[in-house]
Length: 625
View 1 (spheres, one colour):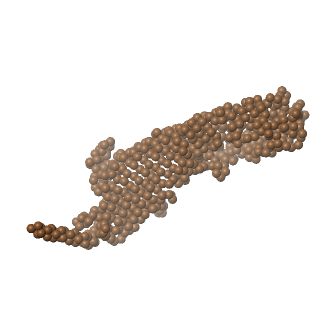
View 2 (tube, helix red, strand yellow):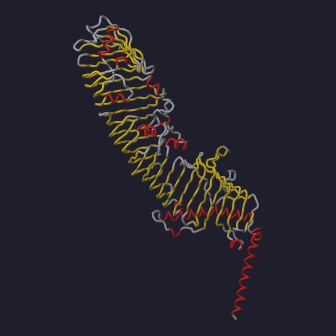
View 3 (cartoon, one colour):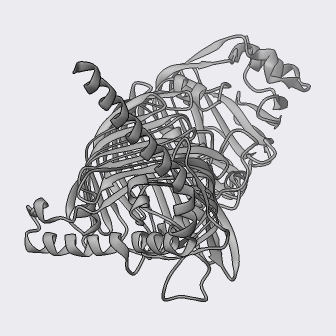
């Protein structure tokens, strides 16, 4: 009895195996007769909503997977017969259900697009997107979901969403193009990735990589409620974008309705902001080399506006915090906000947001103010510590503003050199050219340290004083500002020392007559009670209106001109004992031709240039003894 049962079981298993083998063997025949090209095209059309055309004959493979291999496949809009296809693929591999095929049906689980070309169009929002299908299961499911969302926007009934299967769509070695005047322009190449969406009411994810503007990029996107999102409802979204120039991520909720919005946490990082500006082709000149930049923030974005709150920003490893507001409702984007830093490189910051500072790489060069046509900016800055080149600042309050062709960067208050600093850099674009205005006010500063930072190392009184500089001129190039500037310079100095001058040796050489270099008498210092300098600047030439140094026994005065462009000097001066009036220059600022000099006054002429001045005695006057 047991052996009989065993024999019957073996026969049953054998029959089943035979039936399965016959079915598998019959699949290619069934496929060749019933799963024909038109049926596959029809099923693809019903699935996608596009008109699908298959020029090549399908090839059916049974092992290792039951699939159809289609060649020369196009997906086009039903209503636009003259328009180029939305998708063209050299080959499409479709994984089929064997059981459905045996019943004469077509059921897809996975579709692979090999070397596809996807055409996109630029939308009103500025994004490039493919045309949407006018029908198909996907479109109908979205329409149904839209009704569910409209019935209860805050909490739609997810149980009423369609549950039609979708599957997996893979794409390999593809490209994305946009058409203009009958010509295709490639946007993305080397496109690889896949869409995972098991059913319409399940979660979905997209992973894609490719080459964009010469850089490898990777995009990852996922949402737990894709159908709700596409129907205009609110859904959780995660997005990650990675490339060598920059990375970006978002985690929060989003809506794709007419009142689209994003609300969540965003992060951005770039090793070089200059490289990002060049790669993004934003049209904003990158200016000088800028270091790394990163930010993390809570973002709330809706149509035409984005708010960044609790923002942490890092520029060149200098962290800061604040809030930013981006508006796109006007003709130019508007960026406003406040940022507070512990430490900040002001030159890098200025170049990053208003690229008008000289690069220092290839010389001063031309000034590029085209950024003022592309952005409006209003930022309030503060920093506990800041640098401007070699200058160290503390407790800085500053603003950066760009609007309607006017760019202004102000340091309204800062501590430096033991005193306070205020400065302003202003670019005003006018029909006849850009005008640049610079202002600097240094109050109660260490004048020796201030002069060293400004590159003035000769005959600057060391002590406490105040300096004011105002320059205004054409802004075609940085050199032209200084060479053609008009303005004024004034400085007052308290008690201190005048380093780099041995007055007794100077008077002795002047009494002896003959030319001599100032370097010959620079081994010494002169205690002074104070000094005052006033100069008018015209076309890059400074005319001394007043220049007096008061020492314990003597008064030293100078008048004449000093040129910025040629660095030349043409000054006359004198040393007179205290209590005796000094010879004054003529009203036009030129030194008077020495008449008989005042008693005991030692007169001289200063020529040469700023770095190597020489002295020519006019009258011996005061003895150097």
